[in-house]
Image 1 (cartoon, one colour):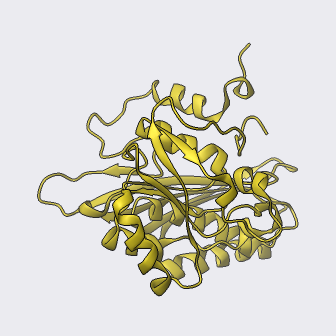
Image 2 (cartoon, rainbow, N blue to C red):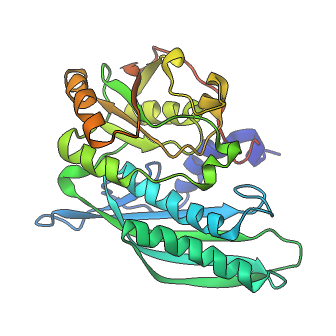
Length: 299
C-alpha cells in the first residue's frame, strides 16, 4: 500500500489537484506561493489567495509563547504575498483546540496575530473555532486575500537560463527560534517589483535545498549554486543553510545585466539586510542537484 511517506509532499499535491475542477485560465494556480485571480481586462489589480496552517509539535512546541505562535501563523501568509510582489488585506482565522486549552493562551495567540496584521496593514475578516478530543495538538489555519498590481506580479515559473540567483538575508537557524521572529519581506519586495522586478521569486519556507529545485522545475530550468557563497545565519554551517527551512527570505532571479545596479542600490535602501548572489539558472537537465529540506510526510 502506497503511503504519503512513500511519495512525499510535492507528489501528493500534484496528484490531489488533478482530482478536482480547476480554473481554466488561472493567472497562477496550484504550485505558486499564492493563487492569483484575474478579474479581467480593465482591472489593474489582481487578487491573491492564500491558505496556511500551523500544527502543534510540527510548527511549534507546547512551551512556545502563544503570542509568538500567532505572529508566525500570520507572518507566514504575509511572506507568501510578498513572494508574489503583493500585499495582504483580509484574514480568516480558524483555530482547532482542546476544551482544556487555557483561555489566556488563545487570547495571546490572537494578540500575536493582531501584531502581525497591524504591522502589515491587514485586517481580520472572520474565522471559525472547533474542538478536538483531549490530548490532540492545536491547529491554527489561516486563509487570506491580498492584491498585487498587474505589472508587479512575480511568479516562480518565469526564470530563464542565464538569469542570476539572489537571496535576501541569511540562511539557517530556524531551530534557534528564528522561525518565530522573522519579518516578512513585504517592504523589500514592494521596492524590488517597482525598481528591479525579478524574473521569478518565491519565499524560502522549506529550505533552500527543497525550494530552489521547486523554482527551477517550475521555470523549466536547472541551476548552479555557489554553496561557499551562501549567507549564513550566526551559528549555522552550509548544511543548515541548505536544509533548516523556515527562513522566510526571498529567493529570486534577475537578468544578469541588471544585477550590478541592484547590488549598488540595495544597501542604500535596506542597509541592515544583506542581498547575496548565490548562483545562476541554467538549461533544464544541466547544473547541480540538491536534496534535503523539509517534507511534511518524510520527517
